[in-house]
Length: 286
DNA sequence: ACAGTATGGAGAT
DNA sequence: TCTCCCTACTGTG
Image (cartoon, rainbow, N blue to C red; front, top):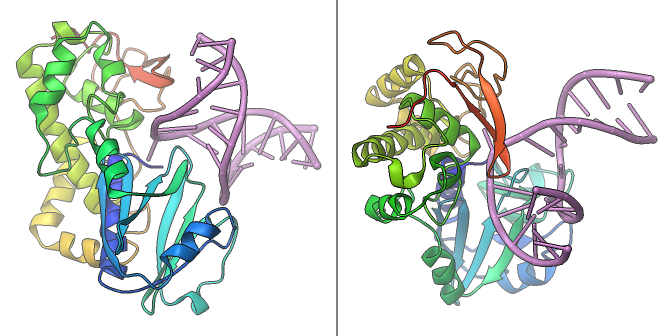
């Protein structure tokens, strides 16, 4: 269930739970056992995210690089390992007195060096969730490309952290035809979509849920303004995953159903390896 | 029991 | 463009 907001949320929880401590590191499943043994007894310095990549840094220039892929998950449970029995395929477990974090089904779980981490960072486009993101890098690449914007948004070298739901929904929110060539996309349109992604991903990160409907966004921002966000971000496990708001989108997985604005049937087609949903009437080149 | 699905991406062809 | 990997859960027989 991971787009960039999920990965940043996990990094925050890992750092909050284990930063500055020397947790137990193990691989109940066995597939990361050798590396886990090397990390045992070291201090966990920090956890951070870039796009959909997660980095957990330990002392001694050891970095665990995790990529959840399509089906991975990393859940931080309250309480020590003794109170959290292993179930299923746990590739990596990090456990301390206060929390236990179980990683399952990752696409990547590897022990790397800081240099290798730099190499990964270098090939990622700007991440709307990072303060150091430079949207001009993404804009330049898009405006030099003849590929459709619906394809470019999924290219992590162009823009890091956006996945299939945010791609479909942000294009709809700005009424942009997904097949608009990058070099035909207006600068103003890109700037507006980038600003929107920054906003949407932040809300998604805070509530552990992708929200793209205006009424839900307004409600979430009101809760954040009222201080609710502090509660959410300091909880070990975050909000009960996906339960805080009703699951509802403009287009995502609504093939054949009426567009919520014009009523014409939502269309879908595989683009960049995943199902793209769009409205052929509302979304235009601009 | 088995098939199908999932907010991803790499490598082969 | 296809094929494969990773895991858990849902629906069907």
